[in-house]
Length: 402
Image 1 (cartoon, rainbow, N blue to C red):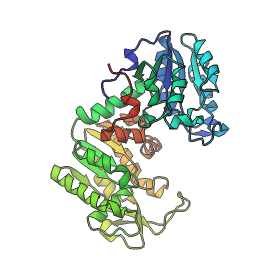
Image 2 (spheres, rainbow, N blue to C red):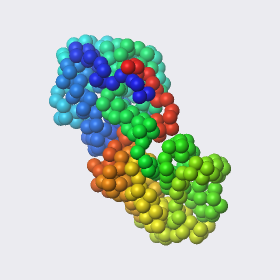
Image 3 (cartoon, helix red, strand yellow):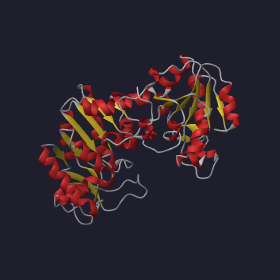
C-alpha cells in the first residue's frame, strides 16, 4: 500500500482526470454546514488545475434510496466549490453520452463536477458496467477519498480495472504516510493509543493490533464495561456485550503477556436511565467501578480516570485516538471525551505526534477548540481503523504501482 503511484508521479497535462473525492458533508437548508472535507482536498484540485489537467470531480452524498433525490443533490457542494476555486461545469447526468461529451470538450485547467454517484445503485454494488461508464470520462484516475477507500464501490474499486493509470491524491497520500508509517514502521515511543466507542465488537480487532504496536492502550466508552465485566466487576445496567466477555478477558491477558499497559476506567459517571432525548440534562453520580449499583448505568469515564488517562497521554511521543469516552452527545457525559481531547492537544504541544480518527473524536477536538493543535485528524473513521488493522483497502490496492 505504501508503494503506489501518487499524483506527482503522473503527467496530467492535457489529460482528463477523474478525481474521486469524499465530499459527504453535512448540509442544512441546502447549504454546506461543515466544509472541512472539501477544503482538505483543495491542494489536489489546485495542483491538477495548475498542471493543466482536465478535472472531473466525483463524490457521493448521504444514502439515497431510489435514484435522484433533491435532498441528496450535490448542488450545495457545487455552489461552495465555485466560491472556493472559481467557475465549474456542473453535470447532473453523472454518466452517459452528455457527460462524456462534456468531458471531451474540457479545456486544460477546467473543472467538471458530477452529480451524486449514489443516485446509481451500481455505485454501491461495485458494478463493473457503472465503473466502465465512469472510466469512459477520463484518461487518469486519482483517488483522494480516503474515507471511502475501504468500500468495494464502483468509483473506488471497480473503476481501477478500467483506467490504465490510477494514483493517490495528496490527502490520500498523507493518510497513508501517517497511518502506515508514523503509526507503524517509524513510530516514536512511547506510543499511547486511546480507543473508545460503544461496542467491543466494533473495535476489538484494532485493539488487538495495537497491542502489538503501542506501549499503552487506553480503553473508554461503552466498550470499557465489557472489559470491566471480564475482570469480575458488576457494571449494573451499563452497556455490555455478554458474548465478548471472553475475548475481552483474552485481550487483557495478551496485554499482560506483551507488557503493554492496558488502562481501563477506575471510576465512571452513572445515572439511572439513558437520557431521552439524548442531550437531556439528568442527575448523575461519579462512582468508583466497584461501587456501580444494579440500577445504575455508566455513560462516561469518571474524574479520576480522566486524570489517569491524561497523565498517560502527556508522557507519550505518539498518540492515536479513536472513539469517545462516553455518551458524547450529552454535555454531562461528554466531560471524559473533552478531557482526553485536551490531553491530546497538550501532548502535541509538548512535541508528540497526534492522530485523531474521524467521527466523535474529531468533533470533540473541534468543540474543545483544539483541532488546530492536533497533528493530523484523519478523514476516515472506518477506513482508518481498517488501515491500522492492516486490512487491504480496495481504494488503495487498485492504484497503480510505482
